[in-house]
Structure formats: structure tokens, C-alpha cells
Image 1 (tube, rainbow, N blue to C red):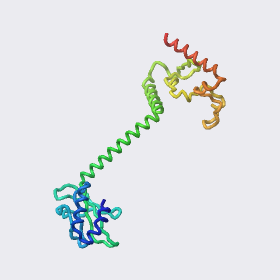
Image 2 (image 1 turned 90 degrees about the vertical axis):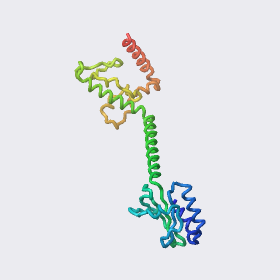
Image 3 (image 1 turned 180 degrees about the vertical axis):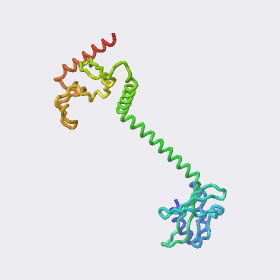
Length: 241
């Protein structure tokens, strides 16, 4: 805004075209959040302004410059915090004056609050999208944490650590715990496993292993699928009676 304003002011300032300068000042303060604007010639005389009290109260302390625009904090005549901006007015590569613009610090705070609100809203939406995309993984983590907590809380139960339980489906004996049947990801449950794959590392070939989700796709294992379903029905009947 300061750059555009200084470029538009250059020719009228050179010609001391006061009506045009006044019109530019009115336009600058009327269509933006600018508190005041002023135009200074090469001798630091104020040529045109919107409020002389404000421009005379400007004290340049802690001035910083970015992209040929200087800015610093200050106080207006009514002791309100303002942010001042200044830029040289150049004509034919010669400095012929300087312009001043000021924005109320309250407006800056408003933009900061809007930015913070936008950032918080974006983070909330992003977190929601991540939860939706990885809902199954979150459920798996939560169930494992819950199982670990329950296992730790119930460590003093009547069952000793040496107690074993037999799987009702296959009859395999394992240490008694809630984790024996807490397999939430059944698609990656290895129902048929090669003995050689146990001896190899995890990065080795396990193409001979068959997962539970693959039984329905293999015609040669139709009998196994039928047997598992029959056995599950028998277990449900036993538990329901």
C-alpha cells in the first residue's frame, strides 16, 4: 500500500498539484484501515496531510526496514498505539519527498486474532481428517492400550502367570491373558503359517503363509472355510447355553 501510494504521489508532488494530492490522501484514508496519511517534500516540509497532530507526534524509535519500506510503533495524539509506515517518493531516480501512513494497532491485533482463529480451525479440520483416514489404526492403538491397562489392573487375579488357555477353534495352548483373542486386524491374521517362515527373519519370503482374508479367494481351501464356520457356530452355541 505504501509503495502504490508513493508511486501515485510522485508526479503531483513534483508539480505541487495540491488538489490531486488532497484527493489521493482522501482516497487512501477512505478505502482502508489507515488512521492518517501525510506527504512531505524533499525539505521535510509537510505538503499535505489528513491530521497534522498525528504526523507531528511521530517519533521514529526502533525503525525497521523491509523492501524499502520503513515501519515502527508509535502513539497517536490521543495516546493510542499505531503502526507507522514510510516510503521515499522517487521521480526519475531522485528522491523528491516522503510519504507517511499509519494503521491502528487495534486493527493489527484484529488481523492477528483472525489469523490465530484460522490456524486453529485449519488444525482442527486437519486433525479430524487424519482421524477419519486412520480410524482403524486409532482403534487398534486404543484397544491395545486398554488391554494393557486391564491386564495390569488385573494382574493380581486368581489366575497365575503359568495358567494356559486352549483356543476353542484350533486347540492351541497359550498363556492365559486377554491378548490371546484381542486380534482386531483379522485381515492380517495368519491362519496357515509355514514352519520355515518362523525360522526366517521378518524381511524374508513368507509367500507360503496364508492370511484369514485369503481363504475365501482360494478354491482349494473351501473345506477349511467351511470347517472354520462350522466350528465357530459350535462355539457360539456352547457359550450361549
